[in-house]
Image 1 (tube, rainbow, N blue to C red):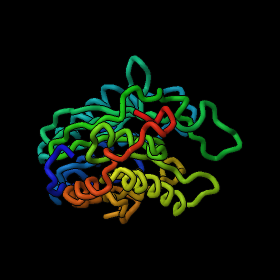
Image 2 (image 1 turned 30 degrees about the vertical axis):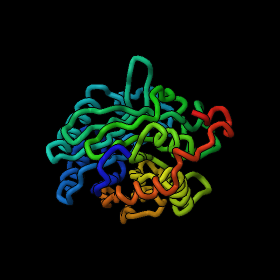
Image 3 (image 1 turned 90 degrees about the vertical axis):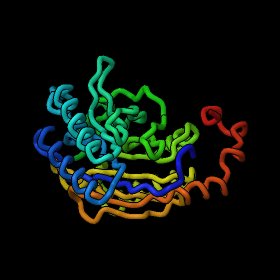
Length: 294
């Protein structure tokens, strides 16, 4: 760890179903930031595609309502500015339209409101074409380009934080890559629906298992911010939480709507665990599959 081992008051800013416009959803996020600031939060994480509905479940001819560069740029500026006015670092996921394609992205702003970096979702789930036999389709491959940026940590003032988005959390390589690159904190944003044949309880357990397992296996705190409630006829799991470097959940969301989920991160405990488990010294990259050796 490259930072002071003092405690950090952090929050997952859970969102319920998105409002009709980016601007209106942004207003709700600003309200959450005010509530977080009142609780002394200095680092906050928002869910995947925080500014819009989850639009990748249907075939759409026009993505302007979700990927408008002007609207998203304005919303990100408002959110990061509001956070900075309280000395709060923030992670903001959104649909990033570029000349290389559309990315499912998150941007990292430090406590002064300076953008420190960006992550683009690497693992893209689902299909290009919908299955008419299914009531819910995941069509992210139709819309999003795979991320072209590394699993890198960024200086957020108190800690070096890195991110992953939704499906990325199912891959152990995501966690290991972040911490090998120097991350002291893992920030996860997700929009996870309850799939056909599944239950809310099962879907939440699977999400917690993936993230807490990644936290445990790297001795790293994780903040998990999700969308909850019913949006467009689909139930999203919500269940935002923060877990410690031992994989234990410190706090969970109590509702399925907009909520500030706060915990104090004991970075001295994290440092102690990392020293005891000593992954850096005892990893054996020469014995792993070639793609896992770096």
